[in-house]
Picture 1 (cartoon, helix red, strand yellow):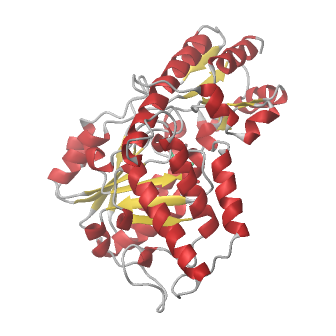
Picture 2 (cartoon, rainbow, N blue to C red):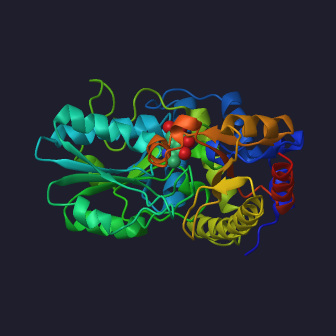
Picture 3 (tube, rainbow, N blue to C red):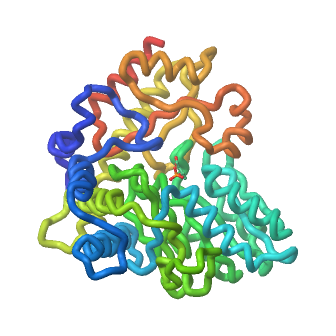
Length: 399
Ligand SMILES: Cc1ncc(COP(=O)(O)O)c(C=O)c1O
């Protein structure tokens, strides 16, 4: 299946500004149906759920539709989808809740490939519980997160393994299923950060072996809202701190305060947008999502190869390595130039890239790059084109 990129691009109002967006990893632009769904919800009467009124029932339907949409996106169950304002907030919630059971005999395993939002909540929860933290290292020569090290890191003491499904810094896609198998054999839970990966590859939380999978809709054309997905029976075993009158059932008991109904309508629209990328309209939404995301992955992989080759051909540019099968997220530095300056010069030409450590602090610390400004990141999304990539490479060649 091929993507009709012109059709896709015409569905993003912000692209009409003419800027070159190479910062999908920091957040994509909004698809028109997402904007419309949010505005439409705000123009229609909604109210707190729980009464028989039309607005209350409408809110309930919006929440149910969003749970079902996100479940389709990741291969989970609607009753296992918990919403919250950000992946960071949700990971703190799960860390705080899970760590109620931890003590000095327990260990958690985190990785130096991860965004800090899948590191610090575990490190801090472990410290509060007196549990030990163990670290998985990145092979800096290849950018891989070697699976074998997990054989040594995981034992019967391991309560939890936290790792990313894809690096937002260098694009590495670790062997999550293999690592999860080691964790499960030892009786540990696996918390997967899918914030970067969900935008780029078909997702199947069961195949990944993710007991928990967190994702943020603003990385895949949706609003700034997030979800963490787990099987309902697993949620049933967990009891977050909560208000006395707030719902006690799963998944609602994990959701603090009133959900954003308008953003949830946008989340559903974003999932439907991804489902409409390439699939046959006759298939179910899950099948269309798998087809559409596979097409996006193939397309983005071609663009990433073109970008990596183009950057590598410029003498002054050095790339942060990532193993084959990477996401289309490339970090690099220009010799003699601070990453912030490279990003500024490109930004002045309307070329939007990111710079710094993008919160992947452990990777950049280990790579010895953090003290000198991290790197420049060009991250691609399925609305980018080969022409845009060529324009970035050309601009880089003139730096
Ligand atoms: C890989 C990864 N994990 C987690 C996050 C944090 O997501 P949120 O902003 O929803 O807390 C980000 C944000 O950039 C990310 O790229």
